[in-house]
Length: 444
Ligand code: PLP
Image (cartoon, rainbow, N blue to C red; front, side, top):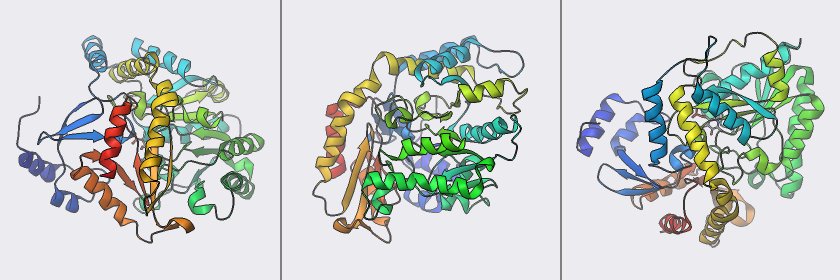
């Protein structure tokens, strides 16, 4: 148990010793972080006893909501039984076997193997090495460039941030690493001009083909994309985009990687984002909803084509001490069974997802500056625009950050500002009544 302290004491200790990720310590410590002490369902509580609706499911990950005793029980039992053992050296253990089999059951049919990691970033570092190893093992070591997209987010490690297309992340640490290039993101509202979304979707996808031809397909290992860009602002590609990307990858013999770290495990109302858009990737990084954030765990689903080569080419010299950690694996398996057995993904697809999207549409239909109200399942976003009729953005979208801060500190609702957009991704268990409550707080 933590030592009880006043909020001021927590904040002072935090400011003295804790460096927060993705934060400007100076301004953070002036404002004082809210100290979050407890969670239940779709709500969290701070150290002042204030109840906050979590419209972001933590960081797009607490799919089951807070306070599920089954997951605590799974961790407790596993810690008593076997708190740790590795799977490197001719050993394995029941939780990792159970989880791997469950993932093979729940993922699309081409996936029968998983490589386990501790996070989405590690999963994306893994796909860089795996994709390059796949081609090298077949006598094509030069086929190693990975193509990603501007404004993509694939994590914060050197590899993940290099795959990502965030220029502010590249600016720190001399990124991207060699052999990773970026093409345009499929953002119709901003880049579509006079084209229809469907026409633009094809055009954006063909930027991949142009890049492959420029580099030579014999030098390109893979294309990676999030089915819907999450941290880039919930950018939903037109329906024509992913089928065309798949065609291009197949035609030029390039591996297709669907980063399902946010979209996976029900966020779109399908188990995986690639199922929502109807494409079949070769590799699929996963994390977040895999354990609903109750334990740090990630992985890469490896399609049969890649798995066959990997399994027949000697050692794959890659892995982390905690790859397939028994406690994390036991919690992830318990989480997946609840998601499956309680029909939570289907409920998002058929009931609460469409309800949520309609409510957001109604809430902002007449707003003078919020436009491109968009969403799928339990992902949604709205863009802060200067002129709706011309789809013109503000030069400085700082206002949206202020709005999100006010919603958080004054209305006790968590939303996030991302570039020009305000985004929302609540726990998948949110009910219709809770959706009404959340939206009332967002528009208040
Ligand atoms: N990939 C995507 C699509 C993500 O959204 C994220 C995190 O938000 C990551 C990878 C990195 O995951 P992690 O933060 O667990 O390293």
